[in-house]
Amino acid sequence: MSDRSLRLAAGVVTLAGIAVAGYLTWVHYDHAALVCVAGGGCETVQRSRYAEIAGIPVALLGLIGYLAILALILWDAPYARLGAAMLGLIGLAFSAYLVVLQLFVIDATCVWCLANDVLIAPALALLTALRLRT
Amino acid sequence: MAAPKQRRTDRPSRRAVIVAFGIAIFAAIALVGFAVVAREDSNSGAAPGVDLAGIPQSDRILGNPAAKVMLVEYADPQCPACRLYTLDFFPTLVRDYVRTGKVKTEFRGFPFIGEDSVTAYRFLLAAAEQGKLWNLAQALYRHQGAENSGWVTDDLIRQLAGEIPGLDVDELFADAGRPDIVREADGAEAAGTAAGLQQTPTFLIVVGKKQPYQVEFGSIDQMRAALDDALSG
Image (cartoon, rainbow over all chains, first blue to last red; front, top):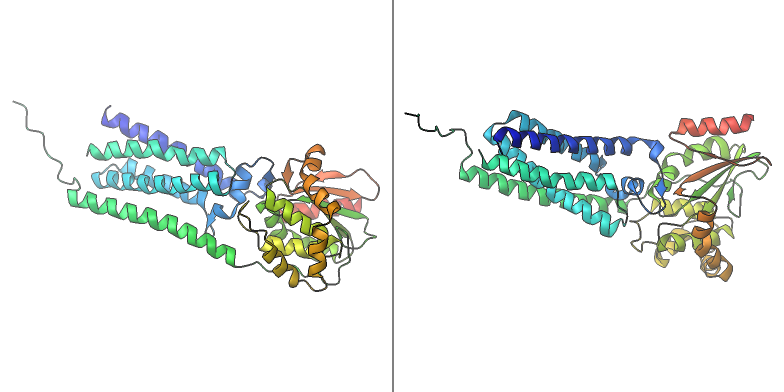
């Protein structure tokens, strides 16, 4: 896989992450979604005590993280690649924590939240590959 | 002859990579740790409640019994959205509509989230026997714990109920164990589902003897609009 293809793939996965995290941030601030749905769901997760850290929505943190990764991919200097891979690593660890919360603590899963958490894995793989090519 | 491949001079050194990796691991641990600590801190404080003193309460209804308009709330004591409604919307409802005698509001339980929901609802029904359901509901929402974590304990109920003037705590516990109340709380989820409920909070507006209709609030202004419309109708 060429360097250019690798960057392109990393960019696409990161853009997908931005789209999902952006949607979840919007839902968080939209009071029309102020409901808990029978059987669990995004609203339960989004309205749970775990949806914010010190008043900052977790979805917004994810959005900021993905935007930072995208900026570093576009910059594409060797240190930027290193920074992007490290951000991906931090994101993966935090996503793992969020998945555990959904499955075992909140006892409600949210497809969009899980998609957001899972997207960081291929992003990290691609960012690591990019970094190793430096 | 081809020129030898030039080594990129700005490539991070091995030491820089190790340092960056260490920082990333530290940041990840710090972020998760901070998230856990911040959540525990958020559980320790309770938001201020709405003063219900002087407002008539009978059974599950708060407000002037003669009010033409009634707002029915189907809720689950564990539902974070119901908690947000109680914190963000309920104060306005009470101040501008209930305390003024224009609107009364009724609590109906749809305890679908888990065992803590049913336990809490049993105590709410018991509090209704003493005309204190809304006081206890507010207290529970202000101290709401993580879903299905076993947070609705006898100790918590005893503590919250003890802070409600006029509520006999021993009678509350006795009533919460009454077969009719236990039966109603246990069957409330099935009853709500059979009635078509799918989410909490679900709101109905009842105007006199007219057919109740469902309303949704995206903002306090929308709630005002829905109530003003009902009052003028």
